[in-house]
Amino acid sequence: MFSGAIVAIVTPFKKGKVDEKSLRELIEFQIKNGTDGIVPCGTTGESSTLSHEEHDRVIEITIDAARKRVPVIAGTGSNSTDEALRLTRHAHEAGADGTLLVCPYYNRPTQEGLYQHFKTIAQSVPIPIIPYNIPSRTGVNLLPETVARLAKISNIVGIKEASGSLQQMQDVISLCGDKFDVLSGDDFFTFPLLAIGGRGVVSVVSNIVPADMAAMVDAFAAGDIKKAQKLHHRLVPLIDALFIETNPVPVKAALAMMGKIAYDVRLPMYKMSDGNYEKLKGVMKNYGLIS
Image 1: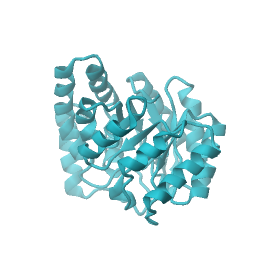
Image 2: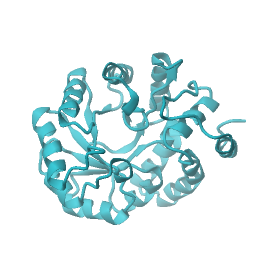
Image 3: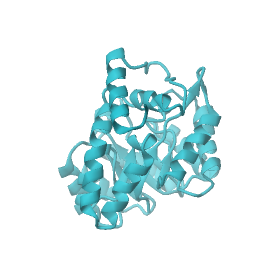
């Protein structure tokens, strides 16, 4: 159902407030450059520091700006099932095409708890759902066997996999079959995941080079493996630079260097160290994104 290069879009701020104008311009930039879908209010969108009102509004703006030209997969995860259910219900009512739900963080549920969490939401809201597995942030790993159980629920249609393990991604693909969309949650793993049967990526680097990430995924899908490989190698230094500090601080700095947003993140996120900022700037120059 969902495939290709899908951007995990930043939430631009200006003087501490959501910058609606810049968000709409970023969405146009994405669509004009071939992005296959947009995820608002994910980790990259600083969902954890948005108020409920802001969270709802960012999703509404994204749906309105996208105008059904590409799917909008709204980030609606929480470590409270009731809260995730409310956010998911709002996204469905607002017209989102799907939702991305991060595994409940901090409270570290068991595999059965994870299963019941996603099952409860999926059976309560008739919208396509993609669980998001990122153990480095949540403290829990959604195991392939649990994913296989979830895949039997009709509106749980895929997973965003950021375990860092190709073996785990392979196990999910093997257990869930080719109708279940396995998407990379890590830009670096996109090319390797495509090679073992993945469908695409929910991407951070697409915020600044949407055309290149889309071209890599499209080239692979078209069977032009050499072109896809070449684009992968070109992207790697940029990917590395965007994770030199905690996401989304570097990608917001990069977008600000490009003149697309203000360099504004919310505490406890903070601006990059001077040394890392200069390293990122050098990579941006080498890539040709800034002069």
